[in-house]
Amino acid sequence: MAAAVEPISRQGWVAPRLAEEFPGLAIVWIEVEGGARRSPEPIRARLAGLSDRFYGSHAVHMRERPIPWAYRAFFRQIGLDPDSSRTPVEELALRRLERGAFLSSGLPEDALTIATVETGIALVSFDADSLSGALGIRDSAPGESLPGRRGELPGGTLAIADDRGPVALLFGETGEGRDVEKGTRRTAVAAIQVNGVPQIAVEEALSIAAGALRA
Image 1 (cartoon, helix red, strand yellow):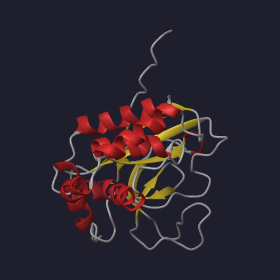
Image 2 (cartoon, helix red, strand yellow):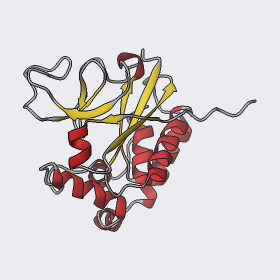
Image 3 (cartoon, helix red, strand yellow):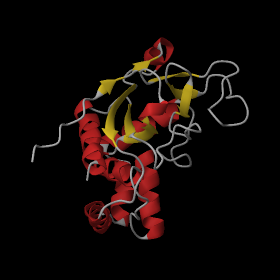
Image 4 (spheres, one colour):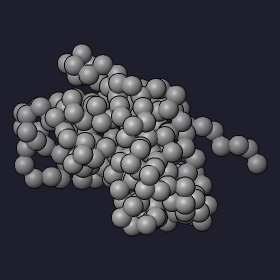
């Protein structure tokens, strides 16, 4: 049986103003066949293994590591307090402590959990067929809103966007119709890179997520 071909990562764009203000900010994504489904046993076992290795002291000291620290620094740059608006990996750590384990939520969420816990990289998934063109990061424009969400976005809201407009808030909710569902044919997984996060870690996170999605 032939080995699975590793999906090709694609470099997204960052609006010039943001690139100047936040050096190192980037978005990279891959596409993998398949949509939402129950996680197979190997993925649930992997989550259980992560839970066994992840204790309270691990969560406490996590923020001192270079990659989680880089996201905390970026959150402060954009006006978020990382002790209340937690970075993705710290939010997962808190859930682990509250629930006693990394509980399975199915794919693609379990794949993103595994990849983020193992690397610290912030990831988000989309229905790839709902996207138009390349993904990027920019400020919201006047009158824009997230698909299916009521009300305009406040001016200058940081958003992940495609050629048609915002598809998600940066480190926030996803627009209606962009989430991965059971009928999704292809899943896009995007990594948000900030200053201090090495490219090799981004590629590792995307590779881990892709492997879990294909399990």
